[in-house]
Length: 219
Image 1: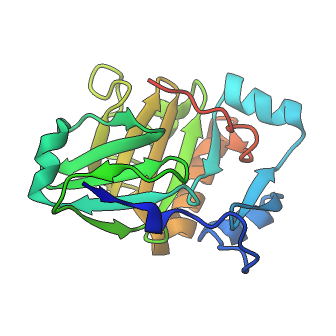
Image 2: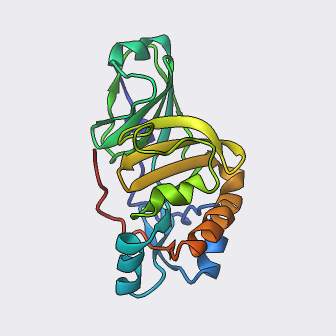
């Protein structure tokens, strides 16, 4: 078994904060930022009651590009028992099989999971932008710009779907009935923000900060 400890973030580092590709858009939308775990993170946009309303009555979206993203490669991944199309929560992270020999690991803390020998690891945290959509209108919001079928009967909780997101290759993870995570290439982060913000505005929604979605919903 091999360890991923060398990829654990240095939360105590005093280096310049890493920045999401969506940060310029987030600042223009009124985002208030803090340095968290080495990243510049939008913690809030509006008053707490406004953000709660977006989360519970319409739809909210939040930049989650700072979450850890690891890409695992190797035939030995078949021994992990993952099923294509279905993500599993393990050790605080979502394990998302892309192919039998390729898995994305999203989120999780600094503890390093053990992997079968022969599995290679690439940190793609700064290769994929991520945006969460949360609230009763989350699926309707995504359906306005995504070719992936997001009906609950087709994409239930824990579904993981590669496909076209805003006419670009991406991934969809259904974290809960009303919580979706989409990922696209890092360079398309601003574009994704613009598409989502425009669609959310028509549904009475808007951005929320990391504090508003701090408690993730699990399957």
